[in-house]
Length: 351
Image 1 (cartoon, helix red, strand yellow):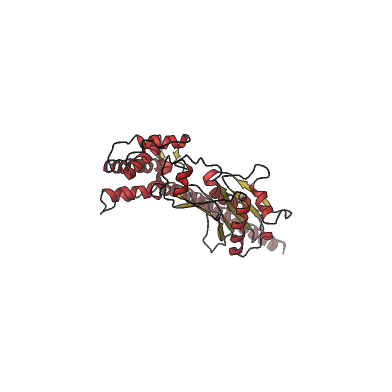
Image 2 (cartoon, rainbow, N blue to C red):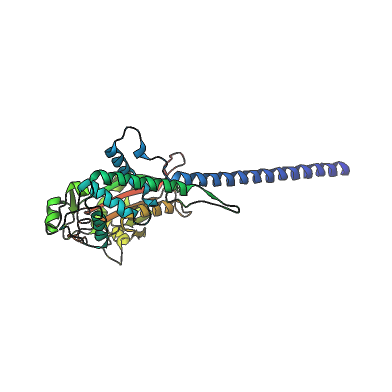
């Protein structure tokens, strides 16, 4: 019996050791496969970050068609512009569309002066010349960007160009949206009059036909509350059940307390303890706030079914120089909000 027991113990030990060895080998193989997949995925992400097609090279386009195709695709290449290329593109576009800049056109801030200077550099040139140069410049940028995205292989290492846009892999879903605009409508004619007649605020130049201005006593937090309530109602989420409030605005109502707590109070949640924060990234505030909220939903301490409110509320009419032809025609007042929750695995919604 003792010998049989010892033999059985030896067989069990051998089998267990062999099983453990097989498991270790399988784990190493899986780890190698995961590392290879992640590396190849990163390489593909770098390559995919640069647009490959050039819409202005499609068949059947005349000179004007190539120019319009280049203009529509220009935002895709902004990240790859260098030196004074942004100003040159702007000047070529304005000259091609409107001809010479008006002699008496006023310039406000530094940005206004730079843009006006870029436009005046193209003075006297025909629309056809400017359209051709615009397409040629953007084509060169596209070619350079494609070359830079290719992996640079050296003897000792492989390096990749960083990408500006990539899949963050944040599983998030927008479940409700809302907006609010003030009652007062401001037309282009009124903007022109406010600027003293030094420029003409036309829809052709700015693409804006009208904008809204907040009433004298209206506050950004009040507008944010209107938009937020609309978003919460659309999502079917009670305000008191929110897990986080993100105020994402480029024009702060005040420094302390800032827009986050002010929005919390405007929603009647002042004593709720709901975390309320603010993001200030000028024109990118909403996008940064959306990314911040999505990242918060991935945190380990985020409860199941949590909802986050992201709201941007801007009152720019009280801060924009009425004599600045580039900004006075564009900006107005308003608020927009959305409610987020973590997306399920099968929903396929992510940032």
